[in-house]
Length: 416
Image 1 (cartoon, rainbow, N blue to C red):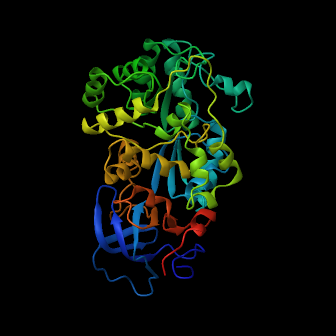
Image 2 (cartoon, helix red, strand yellow):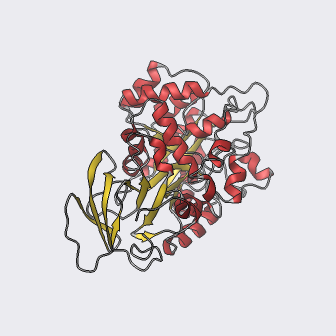
Image 3 (cartoon, one colour):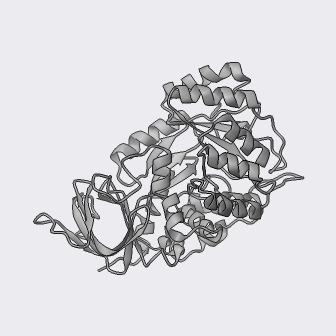
């Protein structure tokens, strides 16, 4: 492909031919996809491109919308690592606002970085999670929410900082064995009302069934994790479906929390491994710290995913990247694998990483392969409709029609 498809960034117009197409919802037969000036112009079985358009022969591959990781925590280098693995958009759920602004400025002009949306500073109780990271020098000091009266001012400050959505942290340490203060139900309700009044989506961190139900009853738009302490009750399933809440299970992170980290296996993966930089490899090989009495069972979350899917609840693929045992980019492929193991058909798992997060987070310009959408694309070798792990065999990645370069892309065999 090199020399004809814009690997050097020289062109953002091209035709991909011969690849199977996953359009964000379903698999289509092998055909052609035309990109003009960084936007998808047409998808079909036969197209006549403008004269001089580079043609990429992609027989034996599958072209997908750029993947979206719906739960990350960014740091310098994260967006480059994400893009190398086909993740073209990351949705951050708690990070230093100054860092977020810096990374977004860089990504706006650097086609080698994933796009970014962020909650900036999340809402947590004084002394609550993740304030311990401040003491360890891993996070800049941030404001907290002492009670309902603080909600409106807290949300207003997040809007002023440029937050795209609001993250609410409901965490008492029950699943980690590290007790900490948590927000009250009245405070959560006040935060939701203040955020919705300003047009912000609200996503809640909840790792216990009780906290998840509290968040749903308070009117949040989505859950940033699934709970791991008790099996899902019918009350929770009914409430999630009735209120049209989306859920980001983060199974690959929950596996690490439950002492079943999949990070080392990812680091050794023949497709993903060669493109993992030193920092991301260190994350994959770090054990999740838990204290005495921790209650975390991955099987509970896996069972709940299947039940939510059958109930029609929207599931979004997210990893909690930057947490121990999880890395940017590569871990989203593991999340897809776990979603399929939990009972989702491959097409539904891929929708959870493309069209579903685009809809949930109002990203109207991406997530599907349709005329007018951004040409955020991933070309993989093989058919992930039959084997979801084929998403790991990345041939090429484009963001806004510009071909990305990097170790992960270069490590996989490309089409002729």
